[in-house]
Image 1: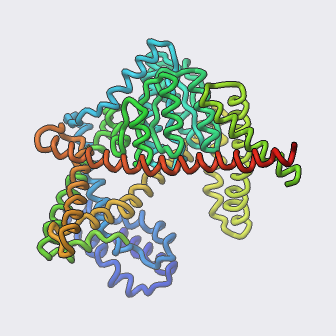
Image 2: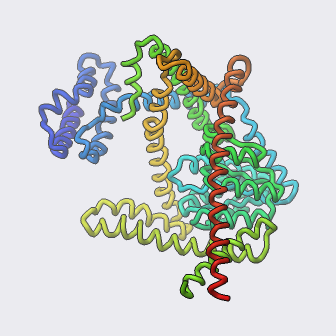
Image 3: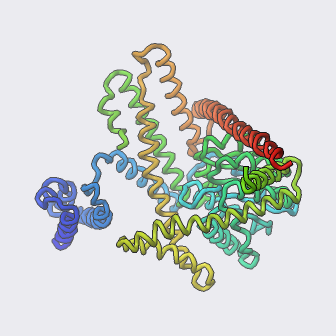
Length: 329
Length: 211
């Protein structure tokens, strides 16, 4: 009863914030929650469900208060995305749980990623540095986060072989994140003393000033291995061609379709789109990462099945309602 | 043309030629241009961020009563903790905030902006009323989307039927890359033409003003 009271207090506050009628709120909009909250009265085994739903509602409260402009607690017109989100999250959690319990999760070979360790080994043999560029976008780009994640793994390998690593970046936040990840990698490999703070360095904020600087570095220091992982734009070919001219082994990965052809032309291996996001899971084999990747694969299969059903329904003229389930509002 | 305009043209021409000199090999002129470029961009971005972010998006709105902007302001200030090794861990809060919100926002925006619209746009009839060309186009789109999705399926080895489908997918991907390549190279060539035009018309044109 106490929890229900809290729920109505939260909703009441929301009503006052959004200026809606309490009657409408309780009797109409919130019937799904009211229904869930009422279940334990009918079935005590559902007590945990009530707790969970209450937590979700209370978590939603501040969000809903911020979303006053839309004047709705929940956008029911976006329910399709919500369902997809729930399915995706559930799949990731289930697979992560399996991975943590030691269940073997199969991942097919991704040639470009197997080459990363070889390429770092080559740099070690030649006594030359490894150049890693985590893209040229800000940290609010998911490709940059993927790049930083792969950097962590590459830094572990360079720390193990004691190979010099150079990571030029374009934004201060990427600099901070990169430094954290590389330092952590060195500490984990027991080489904390070998970590140099200048390994990750800010070069320039302007796209082509950054490119000019990195190109100059490539020709002067001649790194044995260049790894480009992240978001790249017009500078992709300038970087990759210069690296090629400097005789470096190059591995690239980006999700930008317009830049991928240039990397394919100038690099030994290229990770395309989704492979970039899979890379960190593939390299680390950490349960959380593997669970994420397997969850994505599961959702991909579901989407293919949904697509095939949709195509068949539309072909036979029965797909009008089904297709509206995929409306993006 | 006055002196300032001519000087500007010569500085631009020098920078252009200095950067083009890299095509021959790395040299001191290129190095000079590279360092000027990097230094100028760093200084420019400090000014730009001070004006467009700190003043326009944080300080002025806070003075106008949007006090809650203090929270992102605090997250920004926490980044300075990196200068003090004992407290550098505090800056991770801001980093974690940015990375987590990016992942969350990106997930929803991709579902809404790409996944759902693309699914809907691919639900095409296998036989179109609009004629053979439309039917052919629908079939190509459907095969392309499904086979490309299969290529990015990592949980099974690409052998047998799955392997054949993935191979079809990679063909679609490569054809699309070819189109992108041609399109982008065209754009780059037009950029080069713009530079050459500048050197020929503006820079060489300025010779008559000086000599």
